[in-house]
Structures are given as C-alpha cells and as structure tokens.
Length: 149
Image 1 (cartoon, rainbow, N blue to C red):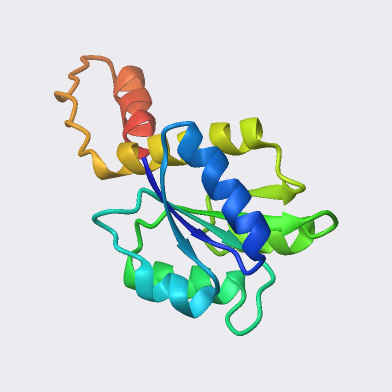
Image 2 (tube, helix red, strand yellow):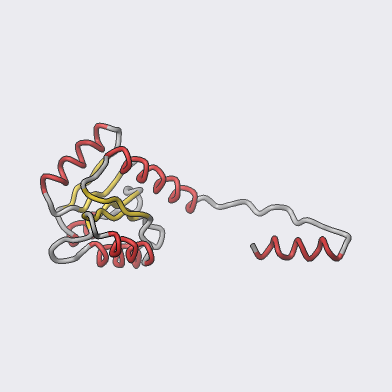
C-alpha cells in the first residue's frame, strides 16, 4: 500500500516512514501541508497520514483541500496527546480516523489497513440485488423499509 506521510517533525517523519517501509508499505514523505498537497496523487496514494499541527497549512486545512480535490481521499490524522477534540473535528470533516502520538506502530498499521479496506470498498461498485416480490401487504411494507435502509 502506498501512503503519503505529511509530518513537519523530520525525525518522527523518518522513523514512521522507515517502520512502515519495513512492514511493506510504500511511503512518500512531505515536510508540510503545502508539500503534501503538491505530492498527493489519487492514483498512487491509498491513504494520507497527516499531522494535525504544522506550520503553514495545518492538518485540518490539508484535509479540507484534499477532500475538495478528491472526495474519495482517505485521511488519517496524527495528533499529540490531548488533541483528541481537534481529531474528532477532523473526523466530522471527513477524516477516516486519528492516531495519537507517541505512535504505536501496530495500532497505526491496523488503522492504515482499515483505511485501505474502506477506500477499496468505497471504490468498488456494489451490484444491485434482484427485486423481491411479496404477496402480502405486510411483507410489502417490510420490503419498502428494507429498500430505504
């Protein structure tokens, strides 16, 4: 899986990238929000992993601009301890999930795998089920409710 990692802390960016690469991920690195926006390629990057707090464009601005460019983008936010409220705001704005720093690499990998599965599932067209036919009025009501759901 190809991940775009946007993180302004150079040492954390390199440690995360190396750990993910050791686990089989392809990681493109960006040192800030503007560079991350320039590097993002929807055909290449399955998931974007971005820090919440960065100089210039912060994580929320990056999220908003990525979603404006690509509504199917899957973004996972990195947040420092205590930044959960901002991370929840990011999820309300369309982020897939958030991971708290210090990063537990196993939890991050699980989140990235779920994010990729989410993107792959959203990209796949779901075949329509054949119409169901019922003879009783009560069953027709049930089928109408099922269709709405």
